Length: 107
Image (cartoon, rainbow, N blue to C red):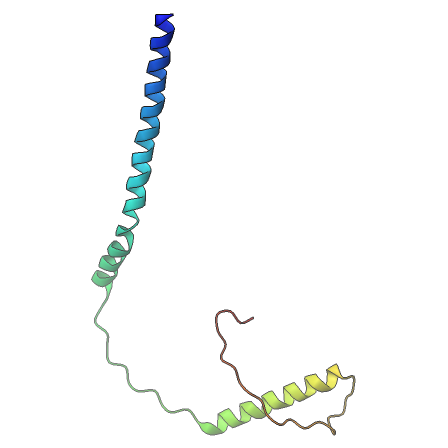
């Protein structure tokens, strides 16, 4: 009976010791995650070359923007006419079109 108790106690201590060692290893790995951004910044700073001065971009031509807006209006008008089942756009008047900023959550 004493022999069975000592064997059980040894197995219990080995099992609990293994669990605690694994928990310590996991906690070390988790604490190492805080070092990753610092290491990445160090590596990025070493590889970064001095930036060359960039010349100012030429201003955009307003005429091209106006042409693009007219094309967009024509496409929207044609889509509305198609959704209403007509081919003529004689009775349609486009009063305003508001352009929205495309964000990361937009489809």
